[in-house]
Image (cartoon, rainbow over all chains, first blue to last red; front, side, top):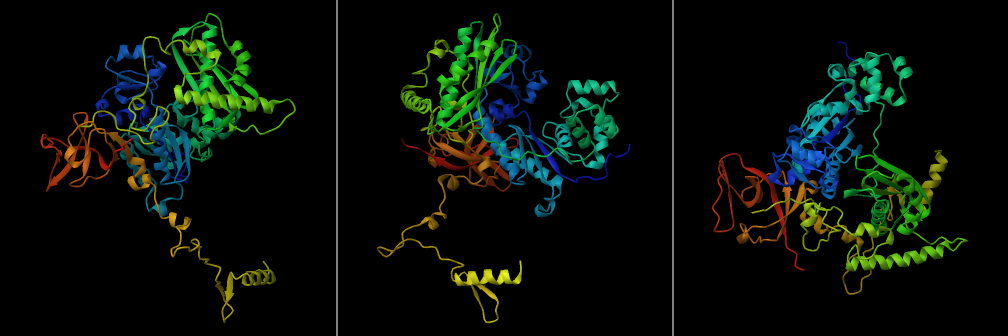
Length: 436
Length: 158
């Protein structure tokens, strides 16, 4: 076989992936769970993440809890504790940044980083640096990571997947063809079922067969993103890293499942209104106002339907948002369809400020609303979150969110330290279980 | 930059007291170059502590935590370290992956449980010892799994 390129690492890109991240976060802080099948996502009713023990038993992502109990009766099914996962995710990126500032936080459990040029200052080969990063991650977080080193992002992703879990694979440019020959083309990052079906029609089955196609042919038959993938499969570096740090509050999201599912339009709207009220509470706490809102409904069959609504001005008051999204809700809601969840995302957040004057008395109204909600927030802080709410969400407050099965509260929220509240806790992850 | 422009700039800086010229015509930093920070007005014989001094202080976080990314908290339940002054309900700051030394308090993992004990090393042998007469030392049969080393104990009184 002829190599695709003769250069080993013209760029040194590393992809790091936390192995079964959420489930591993749980196992590493609770020795009782180690070696056992663990699944997170109880509060959503489906598996969000599962430990390798659970995967071995046939549990897959998105599987319903009821089905998990059938295929793996001894599985430990836990509610997601996003607070802890985010804290550990931040640590993950911080450790990678000990080596290089060029880090793309691709998702909560994955990142890319660029090590190009660091061999001399760190006096180590690229492979050695990747090894050190992995070792530091594994020890500091208490579970394993899979690492791939390659000349670009597409190949780095192939490398990190090559020997999961806890793998470390380096694919230098001149070895690239050996790996691609064994890789079905649909396993390449960014190549979906449709593209892979089209490629099969052209007789392309492996990633290598795709890489070996003529450049003109690829440009002729495929769109730009696929041409970029083709170039990277040939060892070039074309897909850059997005290293801008993520702004935590660039959006506020509230999503809640309710059981049993409901056909009742008023009830589903009340659920949505409750989410909007809660999202607004959070926005006000951070002195933010939204300019755009997305509302969505999830059916019993896990189909999501959403609409985006532009607001007339930035606001953090549910009254304004409810009025604006009402028509969108009515077009979304379908009769005779059971719904299981509603969600809202506040977007285009800006600093909440109502100083601007206008012709229509809007400033006065906003000042009034601001005074009103200051009182509402004070009352809630004193007497509890659900002391005062809008009539629109009344139906959602009548009963527990989940009839029958009570409580999907993560353990950490249930184990508060002196001085902590359900809303504010120490930003340090906790070892769980009895310490004797 | 032309010679003339450079000369003009240098003269300007000299006038301002930022730089000086020595006998050979070489440029030297002037008295204003390393300006001495003013620490505050002297009223009773001592300068008042100014910002400058605060730069050398650390937060409680920095004081208690060395390896930030590997530090975890946990809550004590048992009484096995009571004679070392660690009580049930105390909060510990522990560091994952740190190399334990003889006499350190560690969090070990035994039979799928966390346990907190003194780490003892006698030659090649290692064992765990409680700070409570009711507990016997633990001599591990197999490999001893040390999850973390205790760095600090916090007890908050309300």
